[in-house]
Length: 218
Image 1: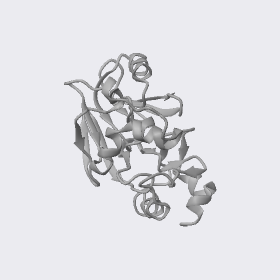
Image 2: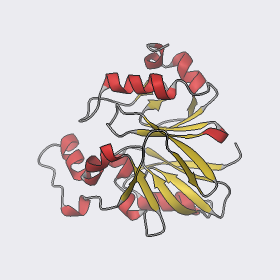
Image 3: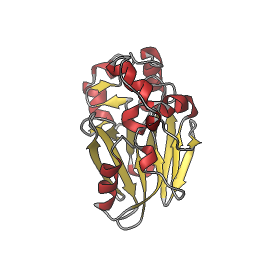
Image 4: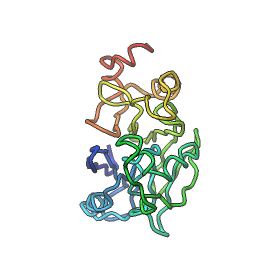
């Protein structure tokens, strides 16, 4: 791997936030922004990086809830439009998880303006080239990001070590997720390094061999 890649598990759900850059001391891409902008800032400062873009894998609060504290007029945020309404209202997500008595105030609305992601898109940002793979199932707009030159997949909540993303939340579909896995993820080279939204790094080869959900497809 020739690019700089680092990660930190942030917020209550230990969401893996990634920074990638051609080198330290320059521009960087952030992948996912949980409600811990200070943690994102510390991750960037570790390598003296300046963010120029934030790519959001999907609209759940633990991946996008801190986006307002990270973006600025010089930083472009990207999200698939199918998850936009979900991302705008993280308080509603917390009510669904914590119960209707949870008080979601206006300060919990996400106001960032997003640029659209779409399947097959290639984002060329500050010397980095990332392919967008639309992988619905965990959410309707879930996307993975493939750094082809380095053989790295940022899988969000599509694929974990030994597991897959849950599909019992609003907008989730097990059949759709598995179709996304079969058509968008499994065709990637087996040596692909998988950087998931939660938990440890793995490889596609290891998941093809040991992940029970992938075994259903092989």
